[in-house]
Length: 169
Image 1 (cartoon, rainbow, N blue to C red):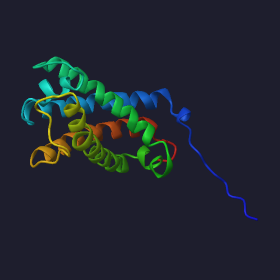
Image 2: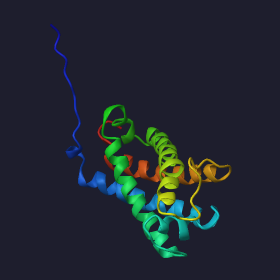
Image 3: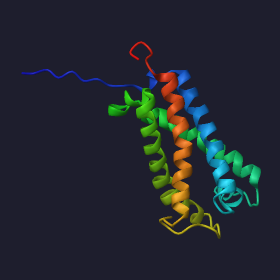
Image 4: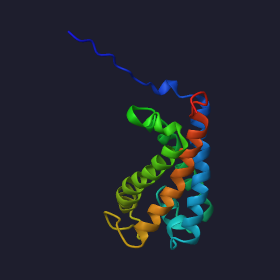
């Protein structure tokens, strides 16, 4: 009878520096995406839709920025948690593959959050500017995808830079 060794990773093995990298990467990425939201994506996304998700009537640009930054930090932490397991653990610690993972995370967050969650959330709250479900529109979804990728690559790079094993190159 063969014995199979099983390797598991616990979220408790993530260091405080790893978590900080995800949070800082998320903050930086959110600033970049926020600039896209403010200057490229047509209003009222940052000043109306984002605050409306939390019951804040707009225009409330400062609240939109604060909420957007909070989301970015939380999603940066989620990225760190996600890449701890299975086949993502080692590539996430190398710069080249991390860029690819960041692009993938940008696609994932666009599909899950901008396309699916946000229209349901805003519709449930009765926001008059809620996008249709699913939120797939050209060029809006493409610009959102670009913004989410611009957000996610700094998250992945920040994590890779602190989590990498410098003894193996």
